[in-house]
Length: 317
Length: 299
Image 1 (cartoon, one colour):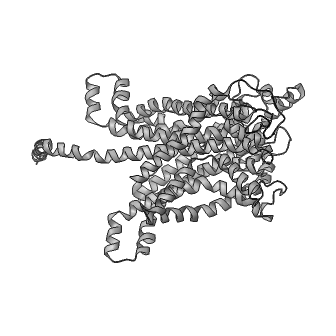
Image 2 (tube, chains in turn brown, green):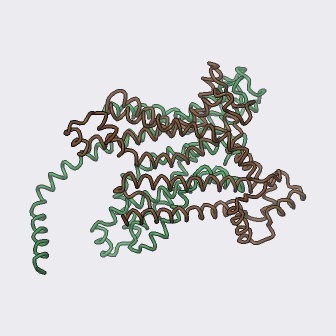
């Protein structure tokens, strides 16, 4: 029991350290500009008024550690700062982009679990046969494909050639649920990579478990095939899958950014890309903190769940 | 068996076209012709013209090299950093040094890779070299962890202790013995890592990081020519298909190659076990005798 408690404590400590480090890293990366930061950030529009405004907004006349302390204190109070270009609070950007991002992302996660497990179990049941070979090859192939290439090809075929689906979400504003056909292609593209990796992991876990002595023992007791598969073999494949699900957040994030650019969805990914293009440092920082902390928390949760499911595996920390 | 060979052939066939285009394309591209209007079909251009009226065929011939070279450079660079760090962590006896080397990487591992790249792109405008360095940086934590894990087993062998006592240099022990023992694992990892790096390099270029807005780069072509998808799909479809073929092919090829490598590995214990059986028993017996003797003395 103390072993479990120690693992949890260590993992929580690592999570806390990661959160602090992510916040520090984000600040260091975005504010560690060589030379005059205000001039560099003004970029294409180097007029003195704008440079002066940036200098005032970022309080560049003060030393970096004071600025970091202010910014970090603000974060603790939920104050993410204000945009350099529009003067609107960063929290508003987040609130506006949240809905259009959440809908496809939540749909993806909701479909990911049944699709990934279904394909993985199907392949494991038919190990070495045509169904398995087909699923294994396709998941292996699609797994490596960047979302934008797959997405643009799907748009060309399904939307432009066949005319089955709308090519982009233009004209639907932030209410994507009003016309679900808009969501089909984005969700399909978002699903492509995570489903493949999850299916491969579940397949490998199931095959290992089905070949293990305890499953053989369960069979000797005369348990039905389905009961052996789902009550005894499947749980063993769950631990790596839970961790992979958390890793998927990383992918889902890059997928969301690409898919929103591809299908013109006004979500957080678009906000981030626009802010990067305009060098709107506070907005980029705010979004990065939200994404970074979310990733840390989800990975933490997954490691704890995985440890609960397979305490012997000694995962992470 | 048949499946693996099939996958190998399929992967090789898929990779061949984009790889040949990337390596030889720039030699065949020739001088830029006169510009046509944007997004025309035909008119001396077999695949039409792109968003600024350049010949798509020529852009396709030129556009593979940056993708492939940046990905290869990033993978190599990631190992250049990860190998010494991982091996040092595996070989050191000081727990503090190991923690110092590996813990900061755990933290870096927590930041989503594309987010890190976009963060840096906000303040700097990285070129192709910068993009390669960034993608390498993103890959270092995971690679270093793998090197450490693969090296730790070899570093604990008596041979390493013997080499140390012989006064061999650290570099010789690390790269000459431990690194070589871990080579199989590292090659397997390099394959999957290259696939991941190709994905990141192409995606970053698609999002406009590390490339000029009118660069001859397959990912940039997909992005910039999207506006003309209705009138001139070739300028998008051809580079997109090439990227799909390159990434898919690389993954299939490495998976099949490593699969066969694994099979060879599985074959290997046979002869070794036979050899062990021949030479094993005497050694084993003396060892056992020594162990029992040791246990008997204090009793």
